[in-house]
Image (cartoon, rainbow, N blue to C red; front, side):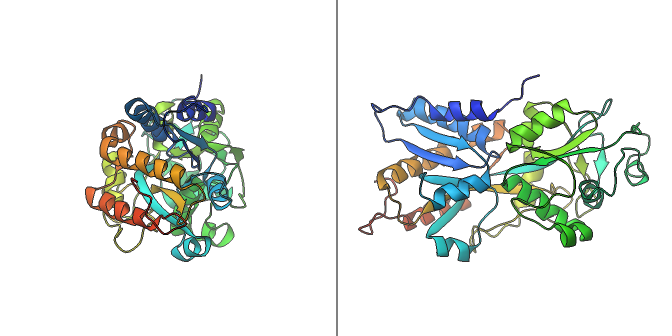
Length: 345
């Protein structure tokens, strides 16, 4: 079965036939696979509406951060927000674009989406290699009446530096003490077990073809590829379905007016999905190519104004209008070498 949102498909969809004779200024970006399906949809609609082209490479958050630091792209994208001090050191600013959810997914014969329940502690023990079989008592206690096989668990994780991995390992560090002390959080960690796939696409492909596997992906990839998602117990003890409403509930307490460095995992509330994340864009305060940076900002403005319905169709959560207003104000920090703001010039 083919995997939806493959890396090649996402790249081709966003490139939109770049050429020297383009009628509008091109802009280039690279980074997170988490938002790539949405950026592809937005870029296609934006090109049809404006003639402008956006070339975004779905290469993972770590690569996106490296490329924007190296100034080889006009914007980077990451689901791992950089600390304010780190941004200041590198001459960067970041802003959120949308919110989504990271979900564990499994390939177990006879187990449908939403049937298997896990806690964060048990999920961490699976990836630590402490729980190795699907009929382990720690899992069956959470799933009475569910026919789980006496089969070895095959964990799947990201092989590349990933914002999705940051969200996943940040969550595990909050809910599993051994995970926090042995592995910790980050875009790339020293995994105790598991096979690696590149991008959300690669993890989805691995899980789809590997019996008795478990992985983690942004929810759109789970839905598009018909992968069976797991229900996770949240801080309130509830097992909410992962969807736009529970991602929104997890983000409800974020204070974007204080800083855009907001981490949305393990939030309070019975309706909050436990592994929720915003996805961010990174740009230089003084870009080398101000015309291309201005083009990128026009695309982001169009996406804020026209893209909410498309985001919702893919189960992403658009930012509230108040947060969009804060982001638009922040864009004023991006200036050319003469100190003139480049937004919408």
